[in-house]
Structures are given as structure tokens and as C-alpha cells.
Image (cartoon, rainbow, N blue to C red; front, top):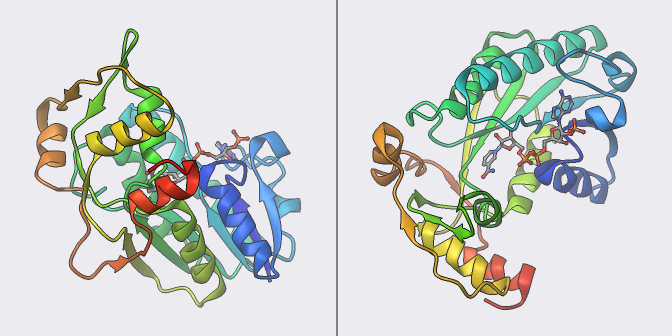
Amino acid sequence: MRIAVAGVTGLLGSMVAEQARSRGHEVVPMARSLGVDVVTGEGLEDALVGVTAVVDVTNVGTMKADASVAFFEQATRTLLAAEQRAGVERHVALSIVGVERAPYDYYAGKRAQEQAIEAGGVPWTILRATQFHEFAAQVYAMAKAGPLHLAPKMRTQPIAGREVASRLVDLAESPALGGYVELAGPREESLNDMVRAWARASGHRGWMPSVGLPGPLGKAQRDGALLPDAGAEIGSETFAEWLDRTTGTA
Ligand SMILES: NC(=O)c1ccc[n+]([C@@H]2O[C@H](COP(=O)([O-])OP(=O)(O)OC[C@H]3O[C@@H](n4cnc5c(N)ncnc54)[C@H](OP(=O)(O)O)[C@@H]3O)[C@@H](O)[C@H]2O)c1
């Protein structure tokens, strides 16, 4: 099967492409750096020839609601219109558990993406995943106050990125559900412990203060708004196992 992966050069996109190729599929790689822009539509028509399923794992680096909504809405509309013209059979997108509950500006864009897919004309399935184990490394790099690395508090039930990628390829292979699948990792963790464990495994020895996010988002995170619902599918690799596999030092 020919599967187009939008956002193929990203963290999840590279894992989706690897997983799809390992199952014998032909992957059509899509990213701006490869000449395909899902916002402007550049390169899309040629890329989608003969494609059965599109997996959308694009992303935008913003914390602002307006910019997030503008990106995900426009990218989804452009992509779906091109998919309809090309006769693509299904659209599979990656969203996040709790986007409809937590008042986080970036999530406004993810929810807008979901709504654009629901309203669009291409059969669809949306996978809502919890934070990836890899999120610990991203937060370590980003959450800083001067030279100090911070350990933000948040309840999460993280999942290995490669398990998310594998499930996305399952969904691309299957008839569209016209609905949502939730996927979470095997146990609840606290993000501040994950970030500290990642830091130690990477050789960091300094003090890392715990910080709580202020306002409604902080409250939603502490209250567990980003934890999965009871019916969620549960992955197998724990954060500690992932850390051991990727750094060998858990
Ligand atoms: N982080 C988490 O814990 C988590 C949890 C659940 C779901 N998610 C979702 O997972 C998705 C993927 O995240 P990620 O961390 O893998 O993203 P990422 O590493 O930031 O990669 C983003 C990808 O999107 C591409 N892209 C951006 N703008 C584009 C455009 N206009 N046209 C075509 N390609 C474009 C980028 O390539 P170019 O720059 O070359 O265009 C890149 O390949 C996101 O939608 C995110 O919401 C994340």
C-alpha cells in the first residue's frame, strides 16, 4: 500500500515511515524541506498520486492559540481537499488525549484540527495519544530559567513514540473508523520525575527545581485532565524501560 506521511522528518513522522516500510508499504515522504507544504498545498498533487492513506503527523512550534488554530485548520483543509481530488481512501491524524478538556493554547489548534477532519469529506480515524516518553527530553531542553533546568509538575501516562507510530500504521492499513482511538502508556508518571530521570541519564548533575504551572492549565494538569479515559488502549513499554533502551542508564 502507498502511504503518505505528512511531517515525515519529525519525531513521530520518522518512526511512522520506518514502521510502514518495515511492513512492506511504500512511503511517500511529505515535509516542507522535501518540497511538500500542507498549508500552501505546494507539491501535494504530485505527492498524493496513487496514495491509499495519509498519516498526518505535522506540527507547528507555537504556544499561541491563534497560531496553532491557524496552522492546524489550514493544513487540514488543504490536505483533505487534495486527498479528495486524488481519491485518497482515508486520513489518519495524530491528536492528544485531553485536548477537549485542558485549556492549553496549543491544544486549541489540535481541537480545531479534529473538528476540520470531522467536517471534511475524507473517511478518517484520529488517534489521540498521551505524551510520548520522548517528551521528557523535549521538556528538559525547553524548560529553563537562565542556566537552570526546570522540572514541571504534571500528571501524565506517557507512551513510547514507536508504539504510537505502530498504531498509526495499523490505522492507515484498516478501514476508516470515523471516530477516535485513545492510546496511553502502561502507568501514570509525574513529568517532573521523568525530566529529572532523563537529565540524570544524560549526565546532568545540577539542581532542578520542580515548578507548577499557574492558572487553569496548571490546575487541569494537576487534576489529571491529560490522563486517558477508562476505555483507552494501553501500550506496553514503561518510561523506565524506554529510558533504559534509549540511554542504557535507567
Ligand atoms: N509531543 C507529544 O508528547 C505528543 C503527544 C501526542 C500527540 N502529539 C502530536 O504529534 C504530532 C507530531 O509531533 P512531533 O513532535 O513528531 O513533530 P515535529 O518533530 O515537530 O515534526 C513536525 C513535522 O511537521 C513538518 N511540517 C511542519 N509544517 C509543515 C508544513 N506546512 N507542510 C508539511 N510539513 C510540515 C516538519 O517538517 P518541515 O519543517 O520540513 O516542514 C516535521 O516533519 C503533532 O501534531 C503533535 O500534536 C504530540
